[in-house]
Length: 334
Length: 144
Ligand code: SF4
Image (tube, rainbow over all chains, first blue to last red; front, side):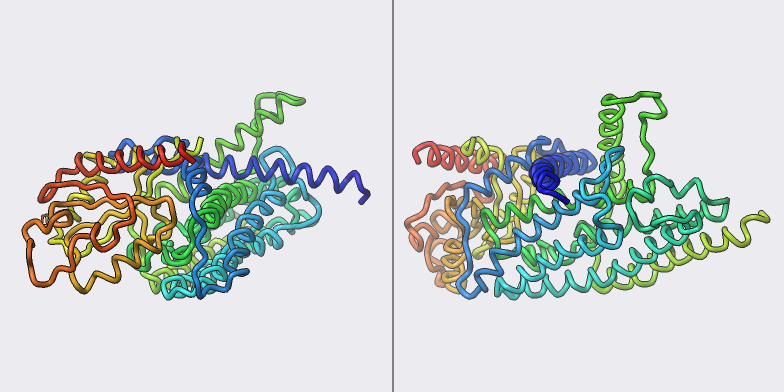
């Protein structure tokens, strides 16, 4: 812990910020293009999100008269900063996370809650009834998806604890892919955990069908209703970065495999190959957990979101967890 | 850089200020796969705070008068107003009705207006008005 360490940390963090925003917006553009094609449209160009952000930056930034000014302006900044911070802890393919060893899976889970909490604070601070309804809905959605998410994490960590070691550290989890440590029952269990994780993703990222907090047709964009210009651009970028970070987390938990060892590469080329393969994996995970679901279904009601997560998804995750447990005790006779 | 961004990214907030719903359906038609306005970066948004363009349909009724002015004032600058349909321009089929507060450009004269005549206008005409709007926004940025 000396001066040089902190200097490099700051440099890396700044670089990561730009890379994260770049990839976040890029994947948002790809997502919009695919949805358009699925609906039989041509769709916007892939660079569309970049143009949107540049345009928003050049617009007037209005703070409503009755808003709590400092909180209203701080919320988008906290939202974007905490989304970028996630990418300092989540490993990027073959490359270890920058702050590896300084935080673990539990910390990442709490960090994922911060952008949502910042949006809730911003919503309440903007003194609009639409934003207040949106903020309440966001809190309810958060409460709903946290339970199945916790079950999934517990399942994975419990299974890996059989090997021994620091089960919550991301390096440990990526070094021991969970698929290799289970029998037949466990495999079914993991598939069920993966399924519930894929359905938790659109809730966590506020995408259709779980975007009740930002429903533009019912409550006029909900949380962000009063935001304009620069502040809105920050929320917009944070959204892209969060998609990227959550996909990276799913990859780290379920598909931490690299391609370099398969192609017997080494050195710098191995890192580059692993990184490109990681980008491909992020794309595939985003395709299944965000894009296809978004294009395929309509928005749910808030009550359906709660029962959906608390009953159906939690049940699927719990059965997965039980199967994983049985795997250790019953599985060896199968 | 900035003017180009305006050209390819235009967020529209749609307000029905007393229309017969004909023009509203034509605006939706401009977003359908047949015309696909999103390929030009035109997107409908749910809040005037996010908008660059406000699309008004219909003449302004007495009840909508103050709301229309408030919506225009809530939109961040630079902004453009597109009046879709004949009845927003001069009354159209509602001409000289007892319940009208008058055309929007009389109620709020100091903004930039673009008009799409027709009852209802075709979706191509609506998309062309948006194209005119972004040309104007572009020039505005160049002048700055
Ligand atoms: S212009 Fe015609 S179609 Fe459009 S709102 Fe007016 S009356 Fe209806």
